[in-house]
Image (tube, rainbow, N blue to C red; front, side, top):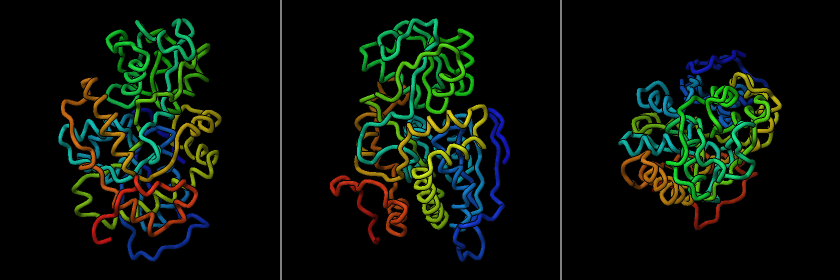
Length: 355
């Protein structure tokens, strides 16, 4: 299995048959390109390739790796891929800017709650004076993170939770894989980042301090599965096949955490298997969308991004969410959802008319 190079988009093609995967009678596999990143919770995409779930659904799948969700959005909008998996902040920022993006499933999160930040963390250096669990000790510090991502939204909301104005910290823009070096070299006092980079920093930077993991009551930052209005209009069968395979891959990751972490090592450079096995537990792999998903975006994510000047206008997130494909997968293959807690009837989204 090929290794990936940092900050470089690499395309990996599925071309090997997999044992144990039921054959699907498709005259010709449909080509699909999926945008992803070096993040442990992108495991369902990686597993979908390596376990043959996409192939079994009649797809010839390729994955393009990006360093951040912002870069991935550019690829999506330029037609480099039909589907992308990325965080909440770039999705909502893109919609606020008028981009024709549509969320069709959840990569990781919970349709049973309008709060979610489990896969985010803040780590400090030994010399920073920042203490574990003490958010107030972040005041006056230099904090490195990738701008325009969920890591920034997470930090800003935690500062608010602790009563610290965002202006009382200095933010430094840095890519995920460079954060540990920034901390170790003294270029930053702390970092804010998603997994597995938080766990990797704790393991690799001597004396580093786990300030907090998750714990943001006012945060709603699920991973999103995005496409464009153009793809929905012209490639419905492609998206239907993708969603069946994706639901299957999500269940497999839920049920085979350590095996999924082992697959992650083929796609994520510089992170050990033991770290990935630990960090993968921080994400909830549930692809469903509920009314609480929309509510979380509308009442938490969007107002917070407005307050942080990450977006310039308020909008209705429901207009950029289409649950048609995940609901169809749930009806067609309920076995891939059977291990998940049911969504209360009052919070379930209705299927599109005609279904």
